Image (cartoon, rainbow over all chains, first blue to last red):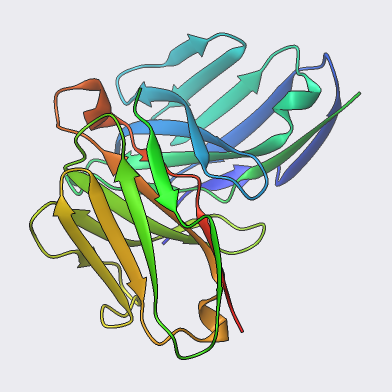
Length: 112
Length: 119
């Protein structure tokens, strides 16, 4: 089952603006990961944040994790047209099954 | 590093035929591989988890006799859609995870996907 819910479902912004996507989940996790998917392609791993971490940066990406609220956010700063894609969060549960449960995804469109 | 390939990238077949999709980890040993299915504009649904040398673990609602998975080596897993029907048309994506304790053990690396169309 898909435990992650992401919002917004779709986001359209201008190039140069920041894009924020949110993810909520329901069960305890070992880590949470964000992936990007271009239309009709496979997924590209962006960043992993562990359950004992609160914030992580990678280039123009900033991820936060609030385990008390069971939520995470992905911020893309200074967006570019090439950032247009679908973004998914995925949780690696704490139950020892070592499998990812994906959120519903956010479709980001960055316009010139 | 950590590249996963899938073959074929797309396949069109007639109803009733079987289709095999290969998933390979090119530069690391994948102790675990995962098979997902994705419908248009939807999220990924995990179908099954396979560990090298053992039987796959299927998610609830996935027919193991319909979707045969073989993980015969540390770099190759195959998904065979048997007696395919139009409702099996979908985007199938595999991922691979390496040994625990190394970088490739914490992250799943995804293949580019295979688009299956059953006529």
